[in-house]
Length: 165
Length: 411
Image (cartoon, rainbow over all chains, first blue to last red):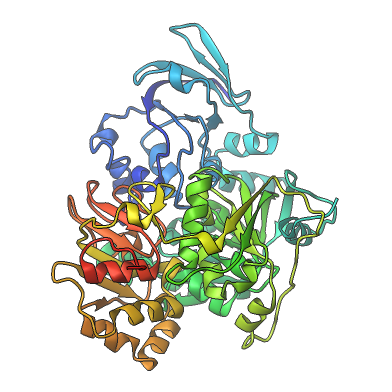
């Protein structure tokens, strides 16, 4: 997987799924739903995000509900990767299944500000801040999860595997 | 080294014998549940795979979140899920109650591996099943293959000692545990409730405890099945497999809860682990009270509420919503006269389902305060981002509804 370079949106600790996408929006068509992402924190978030941006967040990102709409709306807004000090288990799985790279890294959180540019290498878990020439080591995913992300998510991955027979 | 019951269930599901916590297992699933909050994405992902369901008799589709439909989007989702269920002959529970209650009443057995596209799927650990929540894509893959990869979790053993005092309930136990562990204190781990105090917890109480394991980040909560479990299964033909942890099983952490010394607990906005003894927030004015949900909407919970509300009126400036967790529970509550008591007290009875728990009904406006028996008090979950939600036992909620402010059930 190539290095992802993006501008940071920074979020704190314990960002739960009702912040990422409140339950009452879950039955909106995805195209409409993405405009509600992070609404309780910042109603303008969806309008401000540019495709190619990334998220850096604190501990337990995505805690709460199993709703896959949470990583889905972030992906649909063009978020290319999420780095968090730690992830809630189901969110982590859902992001991988949607082909959205996730890296766990505690150290980088205090070193970046919103708007900074960061380089993320999902294959190795390496994170670099070019402006400061600083580098951090995040978690490295097991190969079979990297393969799912590289294939674009679990469904494309299973279709590819099926074709290979 | 012995095995935990979680290791045993997942070895059984994986057709293996020697896997332990930390190992990844490709496991056969006993049954799958999906619901209307995420079902549309599940169906889309499933149809993209171009396969048939692996076993139509082991898949349940539950319409419980947005029922009866009050928006066109909900109606669209429901139509899609009804058509999908009928096309493949899946079990459709159409507006019959909360998915987790229905799965326990009709589907799940001890020793099962159950996957559900809802984070509170962990509730089924109350009868000794390994059950965990996943997203829509994982759900779709299970629907097609009957398999899922899982990392076998380490187990936190929580020893319950003694018996609960009057006015203190299983909800208070789990709130205390979550407060002590923190919202991510058990991420990727299983919570196993054991000890001599566990035998004294009813099936309903066990469901309440396991239901909220996810609020500490856990993959599941689980009880070792016993005579109490057998009583729950008395009308079921199959009894499942009663797995128990070996005496020399390895736990990543052990903690003890002395039930005798426990008082009523309450979770404060806006994180479930912000738990304090109820007396610390006593007197906080409330606008709404809610009794229901997959955590505490069962007949025992309604009986507790009815004892408090019998012959009383709720505070004139407080709204009380009561939502039985399933149609069976609703019918039982009618037969026992509980519904009459609720109506006379000034409560509104809502149709069985997820109801106010996630803001499906009874939404809050800016500055409003709700106390409920449900499982989450996240910002904006029940409405306006500046509304506030407290979580407590059915008794604490009922006495608070009468007082119009948060009240200690011990008086």
